Amino acid sequence: MGIRIDSLRCSLIAIPLLILASSFHSASVGPCEVSYFNGRQIFNFSLTAPIAGFPHGVLSEDGFYKVAENESVLWFQLCDGMIFNHDPPRCVGCQDCGGPSHCGSGCSALVANNIGGYDVCSTIGGVSSTSADIMDEQNPQKGVIVKISSLDTKENCSLSVSVICNSSGLTGPLGLQKSGTCDYAAVLQHPSGCATVVSVHGKGLGWFATLIIIVLCVFGAYMLAGAVYRHFFLGIRGFDVMPNLDFWITLPQRTQGFFTSLVRRFRGPTESYRDSYSPVNF
Image (tube, rainbow, N blue to C red; front, side):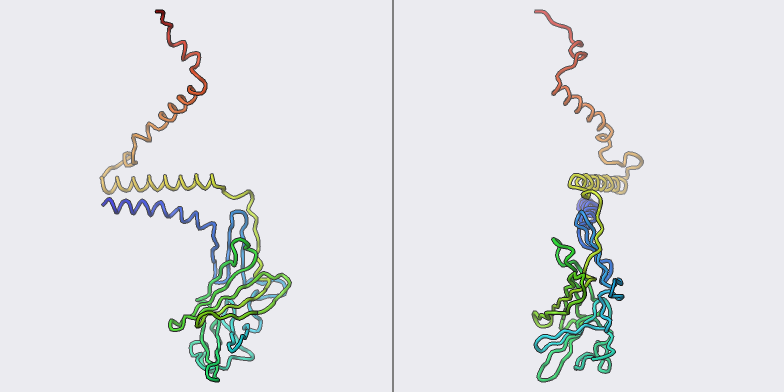
């Protein structure tokens, strides 16, 4: 029983601490929406939001991006499925990505490798397996990384696209890199990689305010866990369900006595305090 109550108290204490800590990290609202708070500013990224010159955000208006390196060719579309109105992939092995007649359609990334003179396709993933995060916590305005993971457990392919902030226009995709058997990385410079910055007045909570919040959360969790234990396990009802009730009732008197003693120590006894004693003659 003691182990169960200790676990309950630890859980109640850990929940507010985790909530507090999570406010200082990035949060992915959608597959291509990221918000990051560094204590002073909020950096919001929405890769699919329309901006000047790019009504569909980071999405390619052709329906896909294409980049080639050595004997590998990669097609991808960030935050959506690919559409091929021209120059479709011509390779074998795309049954789970549009099928032989619509190779590449629907999924978010497809790679073709030349094996024995034939282009063999591997599906990397779709919208449901897309996630995004900021590139650099020290420089949040640098951009975001969009990662697409394979839905096929046999190959476990992945694609990481660094969308770097470039307010002047689109550059890329560039620099297709391959690591391992089926992990790829590419770079795309795009205005959608630039954050919308919201300044927070002041300097945030500060360490002292954060400490006070943590102490209050711990105290509240302690009181709640103690009350639950005394009510359900000890059968105590009414106001006595509060743990250490005698201590909390005498706390104001104890605090007053402490401060009174502290003042007397630094200021010395007051006149009324000295007059209460009569002189003794020997």
